[in-house]
Image 1 (cartoon, one colour):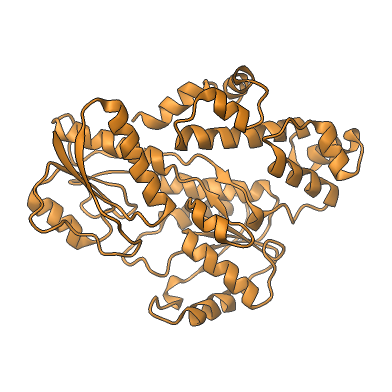
Image 2: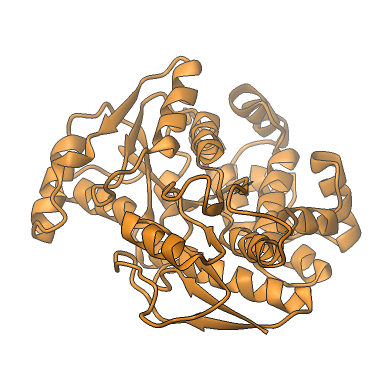
Amino acid sequence: MKNVIVLIETSTGWGSGMVRGVGTYLDECGEPWNVFLEPRGKFEPLRLPKGWDGDGVIARVNNAELAEEILAAGLPCVNVSWYEYGKGVIARCTLDEEESGRLAAKYYLHRKYSHFAYCGSHWRTNYDDLFGQAYAQYLKSAGYECHTYLSTGIDRNEPWIDQIRTLAGWLKTLPTPCAILAIDTQTSRQLIEAAKYVGLGVPDAIAVLAGEYDELASGITRPKLSMLDNAAQSVGYQAAALLDRIMHGQADGSELVTISPTNVISEQSTDWTVLPDDRLVAALRFVRDNFHRPIQVADLAEQAGTSRRLLEQLFDRYLDVSPSKQITIVRLDMAKQLLDRSVLPIAEIASRCGFDSPEVMSRAFRRELNMSPSDYRRSRRSS
């Protein structure tokens, strides 16, 4: 039995999702591991425990000292961080940060924003932020400027209220309504507090999208926080699979596995506020809040206070999509999240997402993704 240590923060949705992904792999691979895991904070310095003698490591290698310890110990390791410490000699399995940045840009463009900004982390040192760069570059290719917050403006050791004031000063310089992408949930929540501090409405003046998934952080934030689904369980699952191959001599430290992000989980912090017609906004909010119910286009028209024909014209004019297609898009997005983050049966997922039957959901998957729900789940777990 292999002895493996998991050095990942357990205080965030991202970290706990990764651990669940490792557990799912162990359920399926047939070879048990003894896993050493301790509670960890997000900014806690991660180190190998003194005297630990094991067979492999799955770690968020976010500092040079940890990388040096792993290399000195000669341990097979998979780094799940966006940091590249030990590049070429420590294998990596992580979310595709550039594709994630592009996905966030597409999301905001679909919502018809024309002003954009990016706020990176003011607590990450020696980090080449490809995530924010890809977001800005995609917007530039679409003809839009992206205002970027310089992370040197905040000292992590400053009092909380001073950090909020610093961010608030930056927010006041932005054109509105502005769509902001933040690198993580903590920065996103600070942005929302900073907007409240200077009287900027969220999402009316400032829309905020977090670059990571943390259900707890979103649920406690008002308005609720929209998040990029960063496929934590898929990363954990595939990191465990990669480490298993390395420990059996089937791969080495040069391996790099990147996982595509799933989609964006929409909440109130990025609501449809920039669309020019309130009837369209009302219909879209109704879909967001009721996709799990057996709703139809007639229900959307009733909520919008207009005729079905006019509603279809509004969708076509501003979104290039039909109302029925929008319902399917939202249901598919939720189904993909559940396939990626849970072990729920296909039938249960179909029911939770508002599909009439598993067969109806399967047809939608094949039509939109050219694969079945089961194939999609397997594709997210296979390397």
